Image (tube, rainbow, N blue to C red; front, top):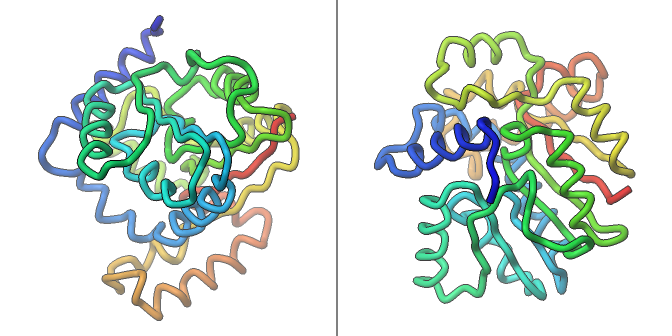
Amino acid sequence: MRLTEINLREKQFHNKLQSKKKGRFENIFYKALYNIYEDFSSCIYKKSKKKIVLDYGCGIGNITEKIISSNPVKLVGIDISEVSINKAIENAKNSNYQIEYSVDNCEKTRFKEKTFDLVFGSGILHHLNLEISLTEINRILKIDGEMVFIEPIGTNPLINLYRKLTPRSRSVDEHPFVKKDFNLLNSLFKNVNVKYYGFFTLIFFLFYRNPQKSLFFKILCKLDYYFFKIKYLKNLAWSVLIVAKKN
């Protein structure tokens, strides 16, 4: 597995991250994105049924394991971090899940062309060379195969300020999506659908505990939904859900 300098830095960062006993401080904010993960999980669950599926940048396999009950023909997970993959393998073994995990470079995988019906990932593309990784996803997808990804965007000035003030919380090479990245995505894939999340749910995250049970969180989600219907306000989102087909 040949790795670039950026690949090696990402590998080192995520090995170190997964070796820590405590989670990142930023995890307290992620309840504001509960709805994007719900939509993401529902989407990949439906699209995985009787399909050959790849979790692209699977980490320790938390999301991979959630779709095993959708009965995919084959479920594969890859990640550049051997620490993450070792944890994923151990978790799958303890739960008796049939998932094929391996250490691999997402920018240049070991898979043959047109292998997968579905490739999905959460927060992985912004750690990679986007053009190379999207081209690789296109290569390993079957005709009319689909990709589903959650990615952060880099157009909210306050979120960008927080990122600048907390450099140790993220890898030096990560690059949340901006306009040129969406343009690239649209040039390489068809039927691209992008849904925006995380404005009011983030601003008021201190005012609810459990988003799953919170009526207030549901109201904030509705506000976000209508807020992001306005084109220029989409730049204030935290993250996006991307669904697209092989071009």
